[in-house]
Image 1: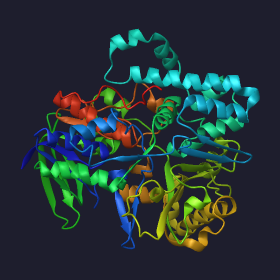
Image 2: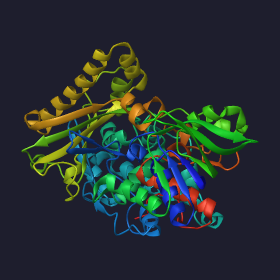
Image 3: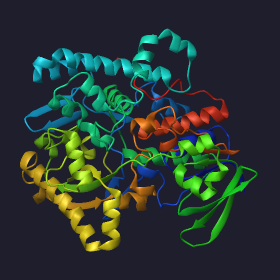
Image 4: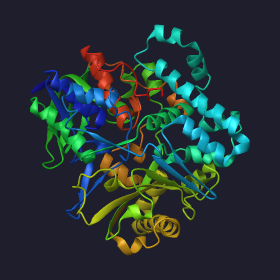
Length: 518
C-alpha cells in the first residue's frame, strides 16, 4: 500500500506531523521499532501497576494561544488533552549550599528575590534579567517563519539577540559579573539541558527559562494520554502506526527517497513500505549513514556534522505510606547541587564519573495532577535525574556487567543519601519499587545513538545559523526530529507542526514556541 506520507519513527514531532496530515485527509503510515509509540515521550509499565514516562517531566508553551494549544485545537483535542499548571510562585525550587530560591513566573519578582539574597549585586542582576527578556523577544522575531517587517520594527531586540549568537550562558554571566551563587541558582535547572553554563548555548537557556516562566505545565492525564490521543487521531483517520518494525534500509532512486525496508521484530520478516513523501523522525545522522552521506548536498552534510547531546541517568521510584507534600514537595521540581559551581559539578560527574557529591533533579508526577492511573492510590511516584557519560557506561556494560550494575546502584545510593540527609529523612523505609536507567538504557529503549537525550548538543555551535532543519537536499524526503528542529515537548510539537505547515500550506503557527513576553 502506498501512502501519502510514510513516517519513519514515532517520536512526538512525527506523531504531531502525522496527526495533522491524517486530520487534513492525507493517508499516513508510521513505522516504529519500539513496542511503544512516542520516542522519549513513551510511557512504560513496571510490576504491572506502576507507569513511568521515559524522559518527559514538565512542559511549557501549553497555554491558550501557545504552540501546543494551537495544535490541539486544530486536531479537536483541546478539551481532551489538558494541562495542570505548576506553582507560578515557584515552579523550580533551587537548593545549594547556603542558598535556596524558588523561581517565580514573574521576572520582576525574580529580580526582587535575587536582590534580597545578593543586595550588593542587585543592579547587575536586574540588568541580566532584563537582557534575558530582551533576548527572548529578539529570538522570537528571528525564528522561522521570519517576518522582515517585524525585524525592522524591533531593531533593538534583534541587535541585542544577534550579539549572543556564539555565547554560552557562562559568557553572559561573566559579562554582567554575577556572583557565583547567583549564577548557580539561575542555572540550576541545567539538568533540563544536561550541559553546564560554560558549554550551554545562551539562546537555549533563554528559550527554556522564559518558556517555563510563561507557564510550566504537566498533562492532566499524564504523558501517555497525550501520545495515545495523537495516535488515535492518526488511526481514526485511516492511518497506521506499526510498532516493532525496525527500518533497515532506505529506497533511493535518482536522489528521490521512495520508501524503506523494515524488519518486523516479532516475526523477523523484512517488509517494504512506500510513500509519496518520506518523513524521517529517526536520528538524521544515522539515517544519512544508511542512505549514504554522498547522496546529500555539501551544505546538508555540513549541518549533519553535529555532536550528540550528553546523556543522563534516571531513577524511577515508588514510595508508599508517605505523603511527599509533608516534606516540601508539590507542584514544582526540586534541583539540588552540593557544589557552588555547576561547571565543576558537571566535570566531577560527567568527566570523572564521581557521584560522591551529586547534583540532581527531583520530580514528583503524582503530585502534579489529581488524575490517578500511574500507580495505586496509596503510593506516589518520585523520579531522580542526573547527567551521565555514555562512553563510560557503554564500556562498563560491555566489559563487566556486574561493575555496570554496581555503578548504577552507587549513583542511586549517593542520591538517596542526600535525599535522606536534606529532604526526606526516612525515604528508603517507604521505597517499594525502583528501577534505574543509564545512557545505554536510553539507547536501547529510545533508539537514540550514544544514548543522547536531545539529539544534537545544545552548544552555541549547534544552536547557530548552521543548525539542521527539515531540508535534506533529497526529493520527497524531510527530517522531522529534535536535531532538525528543537528538543523538548513543546519544541518537538512545533517542529512537527511547522513541517506540516510548510508542506500543506495550512498556517496554524504564527512563530516559534518562544514564550510570550510578559
